[in-house]
Image 1 (tube, helix red, strand yellow):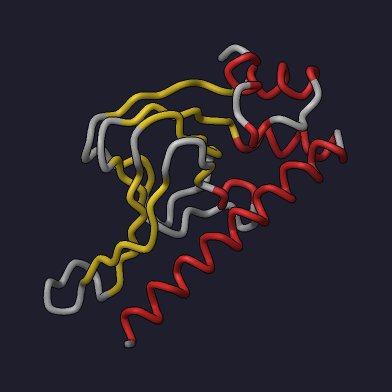
Image 2 (image 1 turned 30 degrees about the vertical axis):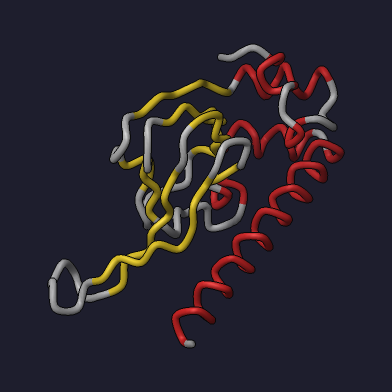
Length: 155
């Protein structure tokens, strides 16, 4: 559990009611990891929504057959910076992580229990709308960034 005041500091959570912030704080924790630490891996169940407080997270995607070095390549597909949400797969079916995330440097971040958050969103349609509007914006920003990377790779 964290303080609702921690959440209140950030624009991502700014339109939530006091009751929403308190409920969200009850299912949230602050985590810290060292540089190089894997936070989540592609294919895992998406159990948490994350919000980065400090540091940066590299998002990578692996392509290939197993771990055969001749066919296996890892591509960086994004970077998460402070005050950004990540792990949005936790709110989008089938609730499975679709990239790898690791700390590029020492990180502090909030973990929000996704199952509890989805239940809150279902019970409070205003909260659900606010969260999903913000999550949709994040998804679109990530899609644009990946398109830029693809265009650069093909140029």
